[in-house]
Image (cartoon, rainbow, N blue to C red; front, side, top):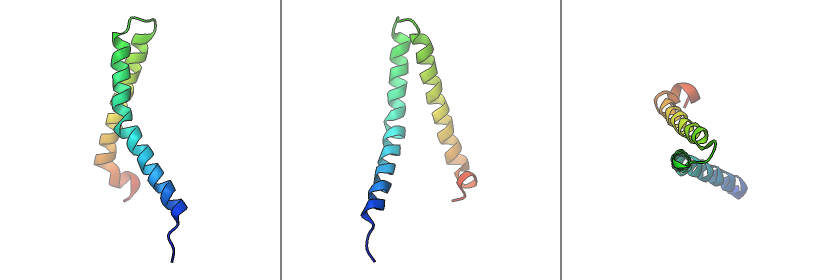
Amino acid sequence: MGIDFGALAIAIASVLGVGLLLGAGIPLIYAIGIRSLESERAGSTLLGRSLLGLCVLLALAGIVVIVFGKQLFGI
C-alpha cells in the first residue's frame, strides 16, 4: 500500500490556496478598498465601496458556514 504523492500534493496545494485566499486575501481586499476610498481618482469611491461590500459578504459567508456548516455540508 503506497502513498499517492500526486493526490497528496494536490490536497496540500488546495488547502494552501484557500488559506491564502481567505486568510490573507480578505485583509488585502479591505486595505485596497480603504485606499480607494481615500484616493481622489474618478471611480475610486465606487471601487472602494464595492470592495468593502465584498469583505462584508465574505465575513457573513464565513459566519454562515461556521453556524450552519453541518446542515450545509452534512459533515
